[in-house]
Image 1 (spheres, rainbow, N blue to C red):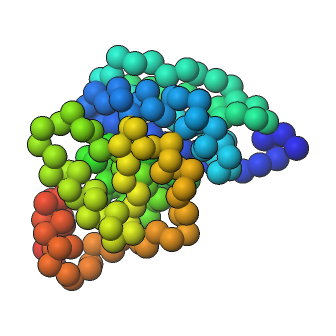
Image 2: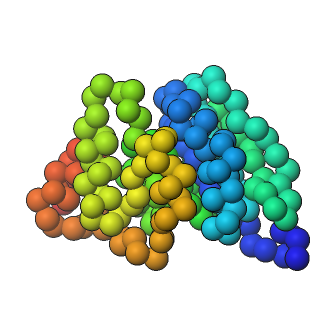
Image 3: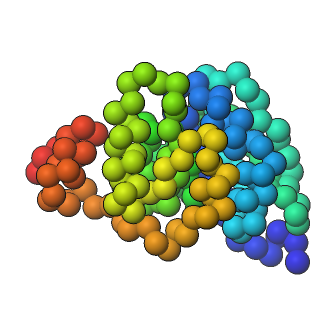
Length: 173
């Protein structure tokens, strides 16, 4: 059975406007691509931002992912919406959760100011997303069970949610 008969299941990777070559390089590794393919994903679309590392493009077939990449796009939201899984830097957490997409946040350990990683870890503890580093990404994908993730609701009234919403620039309503 070729991939034509299967629904496209796209993994969208986004680094936003930053340069996060470690993430793009990790995604482009054979073991990560194999792990995604084994989970039933068919396409990998990488938004690489300012990075200099170029992933390997591939057409994809019955035993591998189709891979494509671009630098910037005005329609990131469309890519997020059509994705079955989003793998992103910590700066896109909120937009992705709001769309109700399963999310693996990859923390950029090279950033000095790492409150975003604290946020990602907090949300991972609450089962809203998975949190990884470029080094642990393969294991996180291999072990993840998306059915165990809980939807994030911005209306959540707990103090930490209020703090998170404020931090993300969401109004206190």
